[in-house]
Amino acid sequence: MNTLLPLTFIAMAAMFACTSPAKVFDDEVEELISTSQSVSGLITEERIAHLPEPVRQYFRASGFLGQPISTATEVLWAESKIKLGPDQDWRELETRQYNFTASGSRLAYMNARMAWVIPFEGRDRYHNGQGHMLGTLARTIKVFDNHSREVTLGGAVILLAEALLEPSIALQEYMSWEAVDSLTARGTFRDGDIEVTGTFFFNEEGEYIRFESNDRPFEVSSGKYEMVPFSINLKDYVESDGIRIAGHVNATWHLEKGDFTYWDGRITGLRRGVTT
Image (cartoon, rainbow, N blue to C red):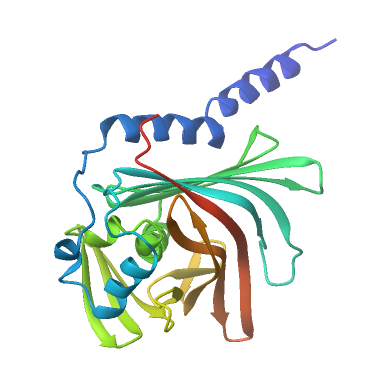
């Protein structure tokens, strides 16, 4: 019996297991929590005075005034699902996510099942002006490991869209704002040579209900990207620890052949000021 192939397979599996997205995610969360620059103080009228009126109204209506500025925040996803292509079925996901205020960073981990059995794991990171997407199948096969500028721009756009989910981010120097009208504002995120802009829409109750951007690249085929209009819709606001946040979020690409909603999830709350 030839033992070389089994031993080689075991060695390769062990090598890939060391780069499991779950382990990478956990290690990065721990590192960023321990090294993130602390931000202190409360969110006050004085701190939001420079923001456009609809953004200020969001802070008031959502109960963030008087709350501490959060150094690190965990987004608590109750459920989520994803479509990997316009013609594919929805796949249930386990999603874990942390956003970091001072550095303007975001980490997300997703775990799904392919063919209802094979685990697919992905880790999405934006940190220090660099995006990275890592994905494995069956915890051994690396499916993607993408550090491209397009992934970086995509990560920056998502961080921008979530600047009001954890609005400590909206107050940082890397964010700038301009008024559009009484229910609309435009925000820009800058990080080194990365700059992305999006439009934030609000309703009369002060709820943040929609985000639109033309700055997120869409992968039309392997390694080929095009700029495609992108939006996020937010609704079903819920209260958690005195704060009102959107309980239902979905994300859509507006393709020439029709809209492609690829993400849908429900949030139960935020764990703000994470230290461990």
